[in-house]
Amino acid sequence: MNILGIESTCDETGVAVVEGGVKVLKSVVSSSVDLHVKYGGVVPEIAAREQVRVIIPLIELVLSEIPISKIDAIAVSYGPGLIGPLLVGVETAKTLAFAYNKKLIAVNHLVGHIYSSWLEVNTFPKFPLIGLVVSGGHTDLVLIRKHNDFKLLGSTLDDAVGEAFDKVAKKLGLSYPGGPEVEKAASKFQISNDKLQSDVKFPKPMINSKDFNFSFSGIKTSVATYVDKNSSDKNIVAGVSYEFQKSVCDVLVSKTLRAAEKYDAKSIVVGGGVAANNFLHEQFLKSSKVKVYFPNKKYSVDNGAMIASAAFFTKNFVRPLALTAETSLHF
Ligand code: KG4
Ligand code: ZN
Image 1: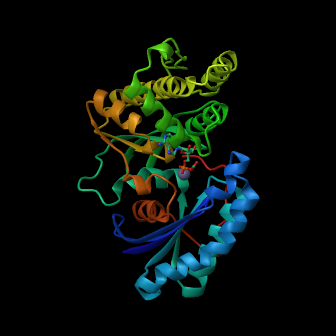
Image 2: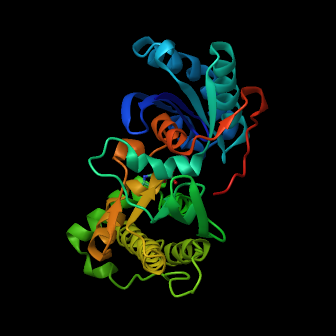
């Protein structure tokens, strides 16, 4: 079964065709990230206008290689996300499904991030599994007993982890998106092992709480306070980045492993933009008894292939003209 997946929940526009939920026949992604850099965050109107401009050319490009006659269904992420961007993808998918008389499958974007670990891999995650979705808008821990059976265990009570990376980066004078910049700065600290900065320590919020919720706004404030107090010292960027990243990753790893133990998980799947973070990989690999799956880097950022894969495994068929975008969809 070949599924054409469309993704447009935030600043990326992704179109892909995936066979049988796992084999990517074609995947293209266009990002408007460069247009948002000077604002330090995604401007929804700019993102949506760019999506209006690129979505049809991207679909034409994909269909020039895999003709529409070879497509069995159209899938689209209908939420959560920004309303302007979402509408571009959802209305385009509905129109395609209606015009070509194809089935339409509605996909929760967060579920898409989980299924990015099924794309182009040699072994698949085993159930029951614990999913950790860490992105610019979400931090969710979820128990997945089988395909299409999701139980939300906990979420962030305030900022998402990617959002915390972005805000800390801004405070340190690093550019947007902040996650990769903070990671780069932190890796310099590891190499130089700058003794001067080793006194910087940030809290590990809720690491010992019995529930599976998270909180990242306090640590962001601690970083801001430290940076303000030491503003005359230009050499704090690497040390602060390292310690911030370490605190955040310790909390994510500790809570995820606790959930895996409690529910006897056979694997852990990490998805979302922050899953691209190498330090997070290392921390998980160092401490987990069960196998931890990270998506191939090109599928950790928003893309159409993960939406097509999730569609294959969840098969949430909808009547094309009945589908509406939902900005605050949960697991
Ligand atoms: O999943 P995603 O592409 O979009 C949303 O659905 O939000 O995630 C984007 C987020 C941004 O906050 C970005 O800073 C973060 O993922 N991110 C990273 C890294 N690469 C991207 N955070 C930490 N380390 C990275 N290497
Ligand atoms: Zn995402």
